[in-house]
Length: 349
Ligand SMILES: [Zn+2]
Figure 1 (tube, protein in one colour):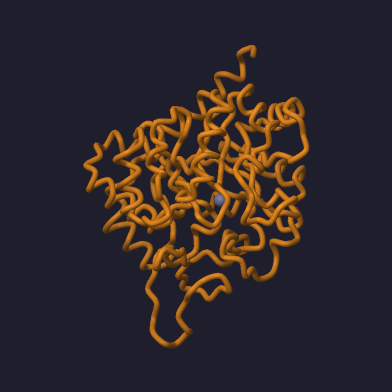
Figure 2 (figure 1 turned 90 degrees about the vertical axis):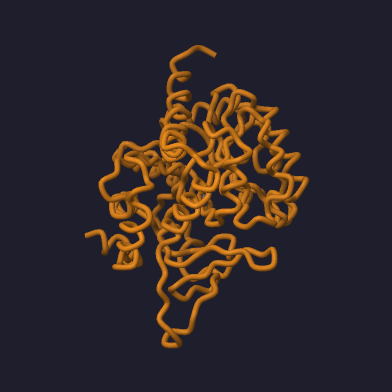
């Protein structure tokens, strides 16, 4: 049944071996995947067909929440798993349908959801939709900014003043995937993150993919952000132990969050930096990835998801994390953030 829903997901002997020999003893009993997408193809027609854009790698046309749940239970044998999910973020997304589906996925599976907000709604409207849908916060994205070229979009453009006000008043979670080719090393992004955290001091600002720092050169002055009390580094898709070790050594370990970024995380291969540029190496050929011609030699890869855990394991060993700190990063930090939002919902503001 799972294979019909998710025909491209393969869990093979290599994955089993990596799990048993390297990861099983490291991964705690509870896992909170703080970054995942669920959506149906009809919500965003542009998501079907081949993608050539490596900033939005496409591994599936749609990702029903049943497929998401199936992958989580397969890759974490014997673990209790929770997730924070949201829709895809294609520019042509039907916001209402995409958000309703993410909320339904969360309700059905005991997860939580974020809402992709409209660029034009005012703060009251955004808060009203968040409450009505049972969302914990917002997932803004740079693709929804249409009045300038994508490479010039700033964090302030993509998280509108209304979104900031709603997030602050509602004490919401805001999942920010920073824009711009320079990634975290771009000073415009560093200023934008500080501005956002200052404008919405009561919100929890999540720095997704640790500011898209998939290799050490992308970090720049990003470690200086450790002094911001409402900023949460999130590690999804980061498969570089050096980057993770730096995060572990500089940021409050009670605010670091684990996540995968399904569906792309179910792909086999590795995300690597070469000469200061991000590349996907994948076992399957894609227009957005480097791969080996079928037949030239046998490619033995495991899942991106497992490469993330491998990197976190090595970084945790080097930074001498305690078992309790590892359990915090995999689960308790996320659960505490979620509980904070849920608790404040009942209070007047
Ligand atoms: Zn994502």
